[in-house]
Length: 180
Ligand SMILES: [Zn+2]
Image (cartoon, rainbow, N blue to C red; front, side, top):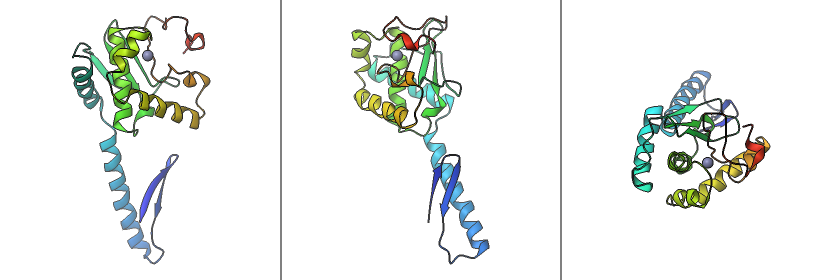
């Protein structure tokens, strides 16, 4: 017996020999387990904040100290964003359910922006402290390509983006992102 998600549906495979009542019982149990498994993979805002602190300590000498880290559902073309002025970080709920090391990468990326706003060499050097940075960027690019996300998501630097909160995005390196 197994269960998996297909879009917004859950597909449960059960042996055909079960009675209707047994089947319902099994489906309920399987859905419960699936939910539990997913809950473990979907940290809350508080978990996220805790995780960010830990990552800052481990990879950024604790210098990035976000005031808040939370999930947001309204970021269509960015995996993450931050506002250095008030120290807030937001992660797209599209990251939920992805491997922890991918979510960690986006957190490290945004934490690094609290220290360095742009995407210059110094920024990438800092992000590079996180050992799986390149792998995670590749993973996110793959997800974006597979989901046919808007063009902006394909830009190499857009896997996690900065939002300055004042309507200005970083420099002119990737001008197509200015409207994001
Ligand atoms: Zn960025």
